[in-house]
Length: 294
Ligand SMILES: Nc1ncnc2c1ncn2[C@@H]1O[C@H](COP(=O)(O)O)[C@@H](OP(=O)(O)O)[C@H]1O
Ligand SMILES: [Mg+2]
Image 1 (cartoon, rainbow, N blue to C red):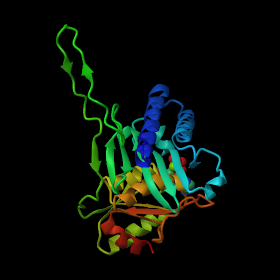
Image 2: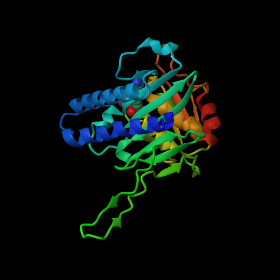
Image 3: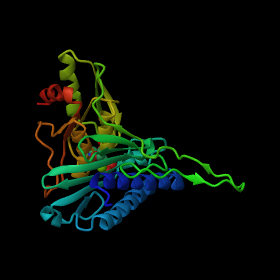
Image 4: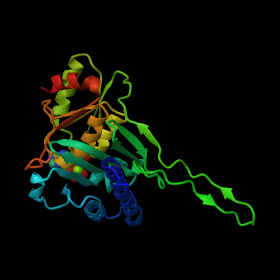
């Protein structure tokens, strides 16, 4: 049976993530620049080859590839960021980096997966709508078929022991969590935009408590919103389609707010992939945050 687009996105993001974890373990952190370059390249090459095999007729836009404008006439375009949060990937102990695999078709994001390899989970859109958090620990196959129970034949003749494997497909539905009152806004740890400080001042003047939470990677930040660790992600001043396509696909499918900072829709597969600003928010806060921003 053909793997559906959601399962494919989840599998490729997760496998690219496994490859990046292995690269980190193998090379260590002594030469950060070399580790970043090796990670970008290895993950990009893996994703390009895997997509060429699984979906040979589809176009691809990757941060690390040449932009083939034939994608503008294609009806299906995979938008991938092989390693988002490259800086954090190269810093020992950090888990705020991600692999993004999204599928755009005829004006919409129709599938997406964000692997958080060092957090051992992948967030992915579901075929029937909605999104799930899938475990990506070794042996799990997020979005795919559960691995069959392993049967072991005991050495002693005449006895057969069946060992059930861990449930391979641990998936939890992704839904907006309850909030506790404080508005937690996640921002770039290295490039926090001024607009966030202005927003904080405005919201506090209106009587709200606001906490800014610095984190790397657009994918990891949007995942933090979706997982309920924070409430809002605000970014301005520069970014590209690959930085947000997959996490925005998951956010929208799970019922979160995702838009430009002026509230207009995020558009993908544009001629110029520069998409400089984004707001992802718990649905109950979107209106308040948008009014604070505009
Ligand atoms: N001002 C800017 N201009 C261009 N890209 C930016 C940017 N600010 C953030 N980004 C990109 O958005 C991603 C998340 O950044 P941050 O961790 O600072 O929030 C990074 O992707 P990469 O790691 O794939 O390069 C980074 O390059
Ligand atoms: Mg990126």
